[in-house]
Image (cartoon, rainbow, N blue to C red; front, side, top):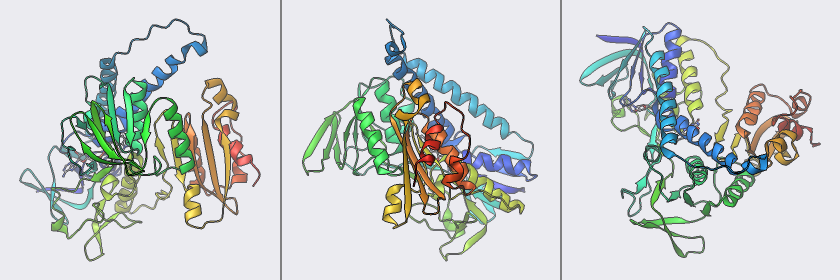
Length: 454
Ligand SMILES: Cc1cc2nc3c(=O)[nH]c(=O)nc-3n(C[C@H](O)[C@H](O)[C@H](O)COP(=O)(O)OP(=O)(O)OC[C@H]3O[C@@H](n4cnc5c(N)ncnc54)[C@H](O)[C@@H]3O)c2cc1C
């Protein structure tokens, strides 16, 4: 019989991290993957988009070359090389994951897996049994239900990453994280970019003030935004939408990127066999244990769901840390992992990032808060880097406990990471103000906010 301590379905960041951590702690593991190890993140998500974001950053810097005294540059942009570099990075990292999964106590099965019961999955007609099962099947692109959504010129993020040449123009439907990252990248690559978004502001995860400033910065770079606009039809030549005044408008475009969110991958898992129904399209889990909750509202003791498939925080680092937390429970090990403190970044140029509460959330929830602000334009390193666009909001409760930080500006993600670590240790604003920060660094922007009187 094919028996192991732990079965994992899906080898993305949630699945492969669970496998590695479990194996290094003495468990035998069988992991199923129907496509490529590394999942969305490595193959068609975080890594390839961040390769492109780096290309965009280089191009934008070169456009400003004369400001740095570099004269008469003759720029020629070779998109094939951009794609080759991205493929090289993805291949190298995928080999890294393959080597992790080649540990003797891990068996990789390249097949689609489905449940037979709470201890058994079936793949290619063979049954596999384990004491514990982790579902880590990730997510895939959602599509808008409008006429023309299935046309060949409509791409999802994976299609876009595999294009061999750039379109002249693109209409991006959705100003969430994926839509905004591609808008920023493609604009830097010289593509004419239009974004159509249903909501009033882009990036709902961010403080609305900061999101607005970021959008305005990107508008100055030439990206056209139509906010509060609902797409009605997509034709071979363009996209029609109803604007906020109720008038129908039309954008002529060569390609369309569908970026209206992602949905958990649950098809084919045969969740009925373990008595589980979806909640808002995702597998329901217990907030503390990440055990799957069945239709009776009871936790299945030995079946867990981590990462995008549970619909909680669709981020690679969330998937990884949920996975480690679950394996710790299987091992009977206590941990200090704070899954409630989940930083997130948007790799536009400039970047945006956040952790914890935004000012909008404090207002909506009636929380007594203090908001301190600081700006890139007042920071020496930002001036030296010629990166003066940016704002940070540091939120605390009335006792000074840090409760959130939202920012946009060069390297905002690195700054937010510091706040995230401080929040994990319940730090107060006054303690942050007392911590020495290297001069000159962008992290001094955070210290400057902490020094603002309440
Ligand atoms: C364009 C883009 C950019 C992104 N950028 C970032 C970023 O910068 N930072 C960030 O934190 N997140 C980013 N994300 C999100 C990130 O990719 C996901 O949050 C992360 O991959 C989730 O990991 P996971 O392990 O839950 O699932 P996935 O990475 O989706 O992996 C799931 C795996 O399970 C496999 N699978 C599914 N069903 C079965 C089955 N029945 N049997 C066997 N195998 C199965 C799939 O083939 C897949 O390989 C981005 C996503 C996209 C699309």
